[in-house]
Amino acid sequence: MGSAPKYRRADGGHRTGRWRRTGRWRRAALAALVTGAVVLPLSAAVRPETPAPAPASLAPLDAATLDEAYAANRANAAEASRMAAAHHDRSRAATDRRLAAPTRHLLHFDGRGSGRVTEVLGDLARADRVAVLVPGSDTGLDTYGRFHAAASALHRQLARQAPAGARTAVVAWMGYETPGTVSTTVTTTGRAEQAAPRLRALVADLRAISGEGARVSLLCHSYGSVVCGRSAAGLDVDDIALVGSPGTGADTAAALHTRARVWAGRGGDDWVENVPHLDLDLFGTTVGFGTDPVSPAFGARVFTAGDGGHSDYFRPGSTSLTNLARIVLGETKAVTHD
Image (cartoon, rainbow, N blue to C red; front, side):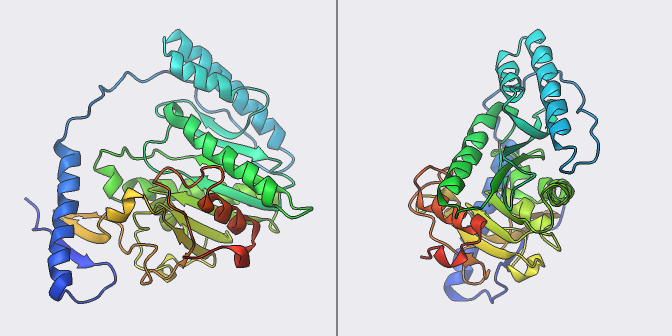
């Protein structure tokens, strides 16, 4: 057996009075969450993996090779659709077929396993403002429709709010194996640490395509904010916006070691507010993600995110979407605050 669980207050303060009682409750709640993820049976049976081709071989990405990459990845998605259909996986075949449509712009596609997709909305080669959406748990090819809907909503909002002459693009980056909501992986930084080099590589590709003068913003939802936290140090981006965040794995925004402005927002009906914001050493594994990003102790720029729930940050017409678009456009003075 490992050592007994240890915990620390995320803001580094002393455990006294009311906090000691609250801390014990939070520690128990988080331990119960992890234990439940270990012992609770999953309701759905694990299905056999649907076959798919290896990703297309691509030349290094830049503005000159972009259309070639799009075409190669669409062809790969079309082949993945045929293989899925032959395997009698009609749902996956339909998803892959939609991604293979001539109107889709895929920087990357891998139909194997849960799938990886990086899709561009807009003219990336000419864009001077680029938003990268980083998703949270349970995001894969089988749920890609809802992620694409969020990216599309942001793309439309940017078009409405952009000043004359501004050129915008949105990158829906489903570039890592996201954790399951009911799993031990969703409570640790393991998947985020695996994802960080991939996100860094994407930002380097975006700079090669759009140029050093483009504004690049990361919009990080839920567990995606842990990915952004693990990727942030020295990353060449202008803004990092955390929404519905359980934490970043860092105690403060300064500890992310980024030149980017760090923003945080939480909807009034988001259940993540009740997630214990602490680090817990549970039998040798660090569980939890530290300081609440919307707390004063973290030091982010907290913006108004409306009254929505955990999945509502990109809902058309929402306060959160309006403010996220302002952040991407660099209209920081127009961002509203609670």
